[in-house]
Image (cartoon, rainbow over all chains, first blue to last red; front, side):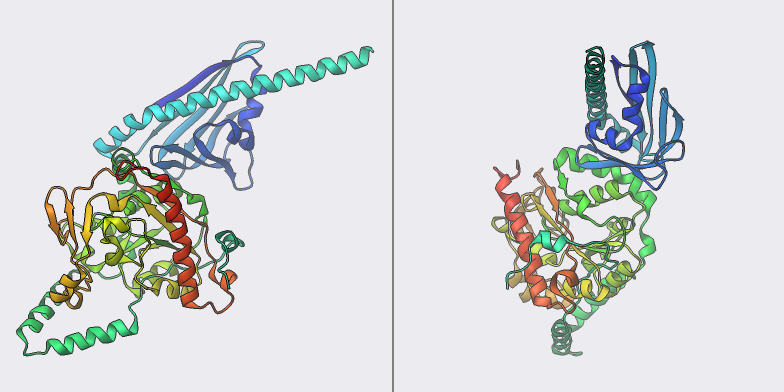
Length: 163
Length: 324
């Protein structure tokens, strides 16, 4: 089953990318995702491995994932190595100079689980979609807040320089 | 001396170790031998008892850890998830307290009669959290594994409760879940549902010490509300010599669906949708907390007291039986 959370962020893709590419920062804004941490020495790029868990119903579900696409400012995709079968993707696309469309996609399932697997995917779907949507909303809040802070700091520096 | 706090117990990390398994006490073995002698070769009751014991024993599978099937577990996780999430509205907390790697002895309080929702809920939570690739075994009463139709439990890593199986599982580096209270605790009356009762069984402590593995207490509430458990029927079990024949100390009596009055619970029952809450407590590294030569009785008292405190806290969260 594939679910998606999406939102427009009033910031350039590079700024959004800074938040999603850093696992520690991402862990802070991801909602319902109880663990998102790098495993091993590689911190970024294709081949990076992360432990990911999401609370859905009675269990924290996820596993070990590996980054398979890493295109800074555009795409960050992963697939599962251990745990439930999943593919995830951050997809950033510039709408204008200062606006970015952000999508967080997740496809998941348990191969061979039959009817119960299908049922569980459908019943858990709204919870997962809710987690993703809340995550992109929190990402937007943080990115735009950081941008405001940076702009205010720049204005202060400019005023101090002029004075 | 006051026992150390759980937080103190949790200090330190990284013990390699194994998990404990219930070990029959020497006095139990002697008692069994006495019982067999009393049965006598010429006593018809004794012969019947031995024949039944032999029939059951022959059905108990040998300790084969390879029976565990990660693919089967993965494929059945959605089924367990549906059961846990929709029927039992289960909540599992504190799995991060289980050491990430290495053997560990998970010690739980047991509830729910012969249908034990806490075990299903914990198996789901553990397998989803750590992945089915992490070896995880559970000890079960011999009778459970010899029941027709329950062979699939072995695919989940359920093995017969014996010291050999426990040691083997821990030596393989697996996580091992044991319920020291066993049939005694699982059939306690519903009004004792918030009581940890291991009946003095200390085998799990000796196992943890022998294998030098941390003990991680697993406390659950709600399982004893899936039926109205009235009595263990331990007197009845003794009168029928079930303890000698099948190591059964109880013949429980309960009110349960669909049977109404349910004696023995041998066919299980349809559990009420009681809310199940499971809490995993911080690991206890016995030699760090109790010194190089821990006293078994002191460790037993400490572990059970820690679990009772946690169960009391879970009990205060519950407002109504079944509803939680």
